[in-house]
Every structure is written in C-alpha cells, then in structure tokens.
Length: 104
Image 1 (cartoon, rainbow, N blue to C red):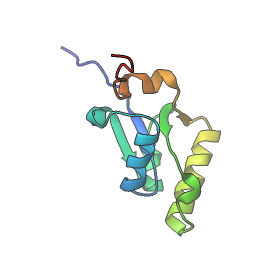
Image 2 (image 1 turned 90 degrees about the horizontal axis):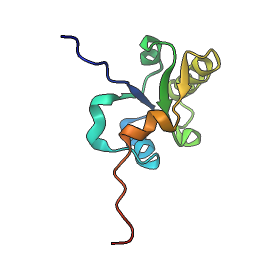
Image 3 (image 1 turned 90 degrees about the vertical axis):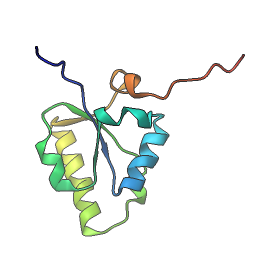
C-alpha cells in the first residue's frame, strides 16, 4: 500500500534561530515539523522540486556575510524562475497553531 505524500514546506533562513523566528511569525505549529524542512545553506535549495512552497522572514537582518548573501540570491533566483514559490494560505493552513477561542 502506498503512503500518501505529505506536502513539504521550506523555512529558509540564515540560521536555525532565524528559522524558528520565521515559523513563529507565520503562526506555524512546531509540532508539525515532519512536514517542514529548515534550509540555512544556499546549496541545499537546489534539491527541491519545482513549485515547492517556502516561507522566510526578517531577510533584512540576515547580515552581509558571503553565505547569507548567497542564500538570499539563490532564493531570489529560484523564485523568479518559478522553481520555488512563496507559501500561500492553503500551504500554511494545515501547519498553523490551533487558535484558541477568545470568548469562553
């Protein structure tokens, strides 16, 4: 019996700490890590199939080291070539933290 493929969401960031901040900023549930891949190296962006969704945050704070510039450049290039795409609400919905009822 074939197992159903789970959609993968990339979290692209300069470090694992920045990735956690990006996930928090987007309201993602840390319990859904089996569907999330953290990418902190430009080289690791090459292996993902066309149309893989990603999130990122705080790109302006990544710094200006050669590694972070390359990560930013490769992400921009792969997005412009439609090889990667920014995640939309449909991609993020199943990975969001449960919202508690405000009025109880």
